[in-house]
Length: 402
Image 1 (cartoon, rainbow, N blue to C red):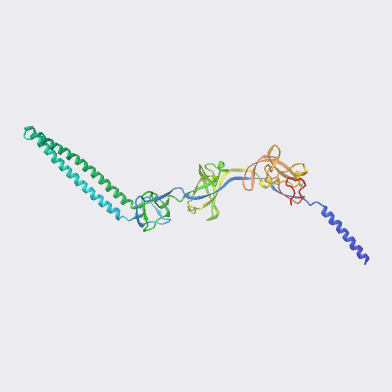
Image 2: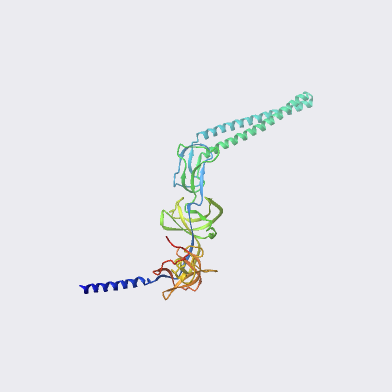
């Protein structure tokens, strides 16, 4: 029995010593690396906007009345001059007849004035001869002369009245013609704001009855770009975008206009960028929301460095070297040191991180362009440290945790 107790005591002692040694042993450190590669980097500006037809015409009416007929509906294709609606023409036809009657009356008054003038001129000629022969007095001649002048004035008034009635007749006929609403362009009806029986009034402002998109095979996106990114936008830049209706499909476009007028909403300043889009297959509809990526810069066949490598800092390495490392995300993070504007990454050499100074260029969501530095294609840079002493030392800028 004593022998067994001695053996158990020895086993427990050995286990305790082994556990103590294992606990005191520092955990092994390993590093995850990625290779520096060659490829293409595209720097983009992301924004949203709405699709619309390049040319959209709002069709109204110049006369008031009740809609009697509708010849088109939503999505109807129309040609220039094609009737699309009609206002009840009865009142306009009555106005035309009334104006025609006034015009005929004015023509009759003109003829009457002409006859009166001819008679007055004949009387004046006759009295002129009689005055020369001494048969009538000067007063009789003056009366005939005055009557002739009055007849000429009445003729001018009749001519003016005829012109006025003809203008009224032309206006009545024009209003009758305007009672038939016609399409001003070739296109597709995308909006209809009236129904049969509805009364429209064109007294002060022309009401909008239809909206016609001239050509839906060519569309545009008005994109709202933040003021921080507008300096990177140029005419002719390539654009890719997606819409919720086709989430798996990417569409292409091109920047054709950068408007200088600011749009201020709740103290946020944006600028409108117009993107032209080819819509030959008519998949895109006016009003769709587009998630746009504008290609602001592009580098082909350049050295690509993972952004994770720029963010990596070896745990505890800066403290051992007597340096103070800035916190992740703080100003100056990733810099090489005081007075150096470059950045720093770490190569894995003999299972230890070795700092290398570099200068980065444009970046996409995962990589950046390597402009300067001793890195070469195929070099492995560290992006993550696994294991090692992760405990913070006293006097750390972060302070103790509670």
